[in-house]
Image (cartoon, rainbow, N blue to C red; front, side, top):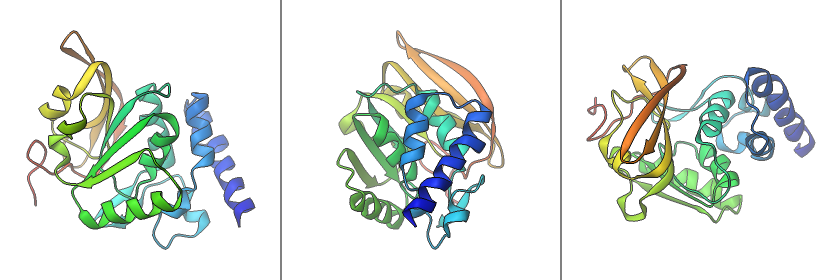
Length: 216
């Protein structure tokens, strides 16, 4: 099983990521290492490594491997960063980040998803990830500022608390747009000003919270 798992991860990297522009060596190594199938409830190995998002409960999804890699690569992590993730979901993105950064802080509005993710990450012996349930649009001020912030849900605009909690020189990647489609956006903070760059179109579940979409 482990051999098959490793082979599928290798195929995922070679067929889904590299041909589409993922070229950060450290990101590719992390994607080869993290056992994605452990983060997909009830999934077969083949489904877990497919080029598509998959349901994880609470009407939430685990993003397709390419989107995880693209968002991670966009942060430009070098190893010493403190990273905030909004939308823990299954915990897979947090695991990838933990391979690349010093500390990862992750928030999910669903307590059961946060707990399940914490359980899986604990079994995989990640010690540099802290998770809590709460309103991710408010950030995690206790541990701010963050060198990088990643938002794994779509928002009508970048929540102001996240901009405030981003360190000088920090990078924030977030899907911005309507409830049905967004533009993946990279925000960079320099001298208290924020420059934004569009990366590509995308579709994420809505970011619900005080500074996002209102609860349906």
